[in-house]
Length: 248
Ligand SMILES: O=C(O)c1cc(C(=O)O)c2c(n1)C(=O)C(=O)c1cc(C(=O)O)[nH]c1-2
Image (cartoon, rainbow, N blue to C red; front, top):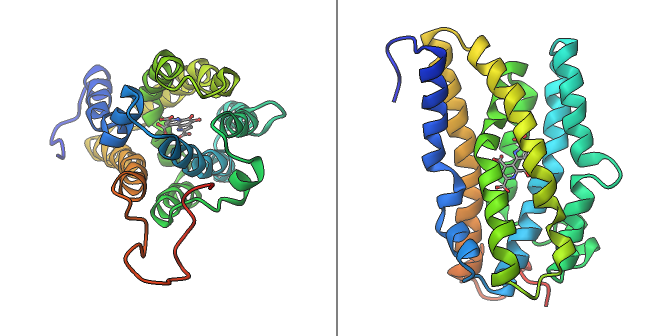
């Protein structure tokens, strides 16, 4: 809902943080995953689909760089790209997670298990970053305010609930705890300073909602395909557009 009056920085921060009530940590697919109710196939499906998001993050960050932020911000953005794309960085850590859950690296890299709705949602994020002023695209990463909790939740519950997953696969989640906090410090302080009119504060909330929608939509697609067993075209006989959603 749009605000009609300019909020103080404290109230604006609270308003943004309150939107965490719509974070995908609350999606039924995530809830089942952390409670330990997901099957091996569901975990594999989530890991394979999320890899598409992982690959898009540094591309999205490079798109933000290309929209010409000041040098101090660019330096911070280079760090974000390296977090994912450097040797031993996030992309490699996620591939290790894939292997730890029983997937083949080449299957992940081919994106053959990626559901169309996941692809559309993630591509929308990259396209938004390409086309928007850099400050808008930068602030859209602020769903990361809520990410340390979801990573910690996996570190706390997966070893007990999914003992078949090799422990070294969980390195990605550990690594993101500090990286996400650093990203948020930068992204949030920029947002609180730069989005300084009622219109801009409303715009920031709209953008954060768009990003929450992307994450929620990815979970909806997973829920439909893996939990309800209704991947695209599931009911059409001999349809050659039906995607492979399992590695068996
Ligand atoms: O596991 C998650 O639930 C989750 C969520 C998010 C997020 O909130 O966008 C990110 C990540 N992980 C993540 O690992 C990550 O590197 C990341 C970067 C960004 C971003 O928008 O720049 N979001 C996220």
